[in-house]
Image 1 (cartoon, rainbow, N blue to C red):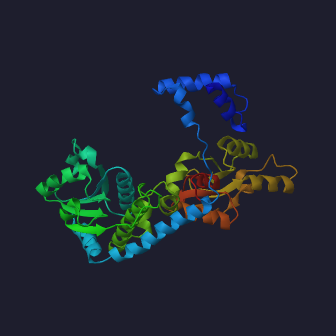
Image 2: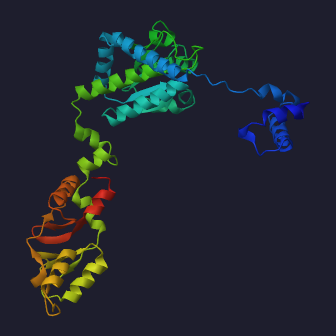
Image 3: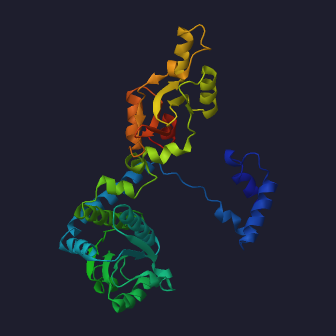
Length: 369
């Protein structure tokens, strides 16, 4: 009988090509490994019912969460302002703590704080009970996140918060809870219900808690006059950080320095350009002062205008007054300068002295563009 059930179930396209015997063998092994009796296997053979209204259900979830955020506006009141003032007046860091999904939201809020000018750390409430509480200092601000306000691990931490006299902000869905009553400031993030049909999976509640964290972060940014430049400093490898912070001096030292003297032959010029692989060479005097530049384009123009070029010197084919830049120049501005002049490289110099070359491809590889 059991093999007949295998035959029936695995006859669809999804399992075509697998013999019932092989399926039976592998399933028996799997169920035995999981301490299930193989004869109970048919109860697991339940086809997933695809609801044709999944699109509507997805929209319903988003509507429920957006309405919950809209309702959250009422919690932006004097207590919210008090929380901002507590954080601004603190000489320590902001410590976010929670358990489960609330811990994940706490991690995100802490990360947002750090990237927007507020020093913050995440402390898992369970780990705090086993030694990690040592990261907490009297000057710190604790923001605990708990929908019920009765999370066991957090409740056990309350005496410690009181003992070291650190300030405590409760971000909770139950303003009458144990955690709320023990806090210095309560931020109400209660919701009518979760978005899931069983009103169990943290969905609406976590969305609202995260939104409250964003509101705190943005208000702290505004209070501190946190600028775009400040943001870039905290994101040195990000696109914005590189556009604002990366300089020519950060990039050009990685390149070779092609250079020839004014009396160098055409052959020497070609060899220098080819060996340094930048498509150009600087022409400098004995004191390393830049006199000009010779590019691939200059060589092509030389071939067109001179039938016999073997006797020419570098000084005769170079372009004088080449486009240059300095180490301290912003890399994005250097790239824009190249584009506006339809060139692919710039000589890097300081007081007329050759320092090196920067190529457009160097900057494009850095993510500028």
